[in-house]
Image (cartoon, rainbow, N blue to C red; front, side, top):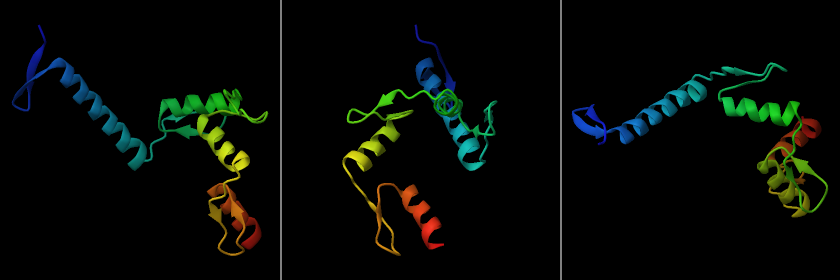
Length: 123
């Protein structure tokens, strides 16, 4: 027999109530992290702080433990996350350069590379 209870004047089973509670917790966490800029998960090895526990775990693994679980199939490079591997493949092996400097026309594979160029060359 499914557990049932009253919620907002409706009878709801325990499964949907559990989902509703989970959605509320996700929403509350979103408000704290995104809108209130809360960073409750602090790294004990450096000054970094994060809004989510999983972000702290990824940071420790990548930065302090230097674990690189994502090797490139075309060269000897390896990366701590799949996103960085994908950027490497796109910019190094596919030679894709989607970001162009408006000042001099030099093209870059990442927006951060373009921003660094602008800071170092044009400012």
